[in-house]
Amino acid sequence: MLASLSNLDHHMNRSWAMTSGFYFSARAVIGFALVALFSLLHGCNTPSCSAQGSREIKVTVTSDAKQQEVPAIISVSEGWSKWRGAKGDAHVEELPAAWSKPERLWRFPLDSNGVGGVALSQEIVVVSSRDIQDRSDLFIALDAQTGVELFRHQYPSALTLDYGNSPRTTPLILENQIITLGAGGELTTLDLESGKPIWSKHLVKDLGGKMPAWGYSASPIVYEDTLIVQAGGPNSALVGLNLETGEVLWRSSGRQAAYSSPILMERNGIQQLLGCDDKSYGAWSAKDGKRLWELKLPIDRDFNVPSPLIVNDKLFIVSENNGSLLYELPEDSEDTNGPDQKLKLVAQSDALSHDANSPVTVGSFIASVHEGLVLLDPNKELETVDQWNDPSLHSYASIIVDDERMLVTCIDGTVILLTITDGKIKELGRMQCEESKGDLLAHSAFDQGVLIVRGPLWVDAYRW
Figure 1 (spheres, rainbow, N blue to C red):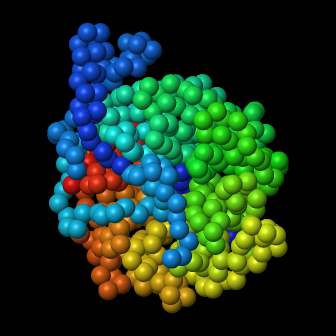
Figure 2: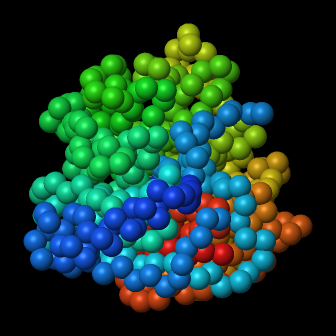
Figure 3: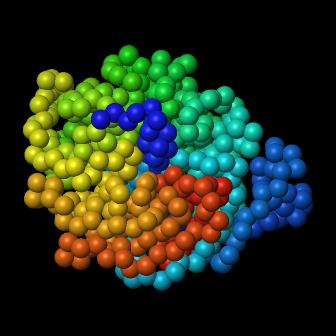
């Protein structure tokens, strides 16, 4: 049932948590030394403070950081370079095998809470925020080893949205660019080294899009030399842009964007985006935006926030009003007649029916949070294998996984490491992030033993 107006605030507060490699080298050390020299000469903490007046940024450094077949999900680059990691499925190579309390490497203060996920790759952490007056978007690049600010991208963005005006999307880090997208539709590519804008487009003003009621939330995605955004206009539902110049390469017609970030995959020889608009799920050709198939759920009352998941060549969906659904994927091809394709329902479960938490696969199971951590078996018609209850898992949580374990960052700042043994969830250990007053609504990031957590007014780096 559609949430009543009296309950909408509760549901949408959770819905905003939707939308998100550690490589240490001599460059990080040299960069830190240059920042320190700059500070001594100019009495300033960051390279960007000349544009910020007398504003002082204090980074808390707590230790010395050290270097540490079925559809094929396509990786843009290594590390946690985009929403839910390199492949968009929250999988990492290896989580800690046993619990030991991680050391906090550094903490960087932020002016506002935010819901956009953190990106890290190539020695850089990128986090989004708003300025203290709530008049501008901020995307801040930090040295991953030290937490020192490298540069920031700031632009005016006058918004009055429910649940805050901060960017909802996760930045995208490429080999020499950073892609950012604000809730109002401001799309920018930045030079990775200098932070200077290369080109920018506005999804509404320049591309003919229509902003969703609560802001743009679908994170940008790259296929070869094409940057793909979900502008959500009647004639620009999806838009492909030249990555280097911003030139429009193609547009596809369709509906307004939803709040879910798509994933890029290859199936039957076709590179495609798997995602949803505000009325349906579907797949689109990555080369020209052609719709390959469409799926409308039985109850048309969902926000479409959680990202879809591919499990054993099947489509798995979590929704608030339709529960969990497992579908056979169609035999798509370049000649597919999009909306006419029919998907067969394989299984359904009401054990997971959350409006915001994106599911993951761990081992042979599906896991997500809904009034506890729920484990489903896709090979047994989504049978509930285990449900692990904890006071911290009452609402939003972001999950990072390897083949056996889960690292869960909870809304209250609790971080829990769990393992799956014989279909049972077992806790290995936990910690509480310091000064966690306020909800943690941004997806965490992890790579090579380092966890990045975006808190209410800070971003932390922890190392195992």
